[in-house]
Amino acid sequence: MATVVSSQSEAIAPVPIEKLVRGLRKLSEDDFIGISGTLRYLTANPVDSESLQPYLFWNHQHYTRNLIDKTELYELLAICWEVGMGSSIHNHKDQNCWMAAPIGRLAVQNYRVISEDLAARRCNIVPTDLVEITSARPVAVDPLNPVHDVRNLREWNQRAVSLHVYSRPFNSCIVYSCEQGSCGEIGLNYASMYGKMV
Image (cartoon, rainbow, N blue to C red):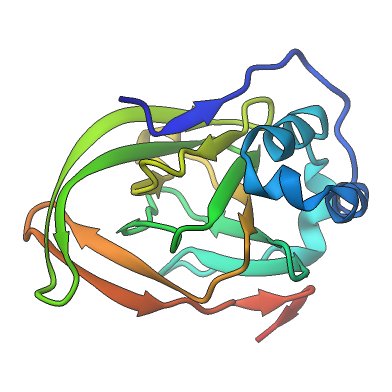
């Protein structure tokens, strides 16, 4: 069972990040409740990588979460991935998520939750499908199966940047370990906000 819905498109001229933000701010609440409206918008508006430069901050130890825009309905982040970096297996606190990769490419490994007991910090999850994100191929996380990780594979040998739209904004998530069968809640922080280091 696939947990990421994707949309394929032909080459489209990239837009500056400021134009993407203006369009996101015009989307309706319904676009963020379902996944197809925002996915269509991201597919039709691939972001020009040069316009992202003021928002990109790198760390050789860990990926960075860089806030570009935030409203009551959504937050837009640029996440910077050095070669070989990956996220923990995680969910999005029952919020919708869309991802695009204006720089490089990323792999999203999806998981199905067989069981989860947060109080006991125990879970059983199994990997399902693997999806690749590029600038021309954004994806939407399936709200029914939202557990996944994101990886900048070492063999690709290039930095990557992903744009993430979350609706609504959230500041914590559940992380999972396949090997240990454990899970727990962690807080989320920004490395930068609106182009300034936190």
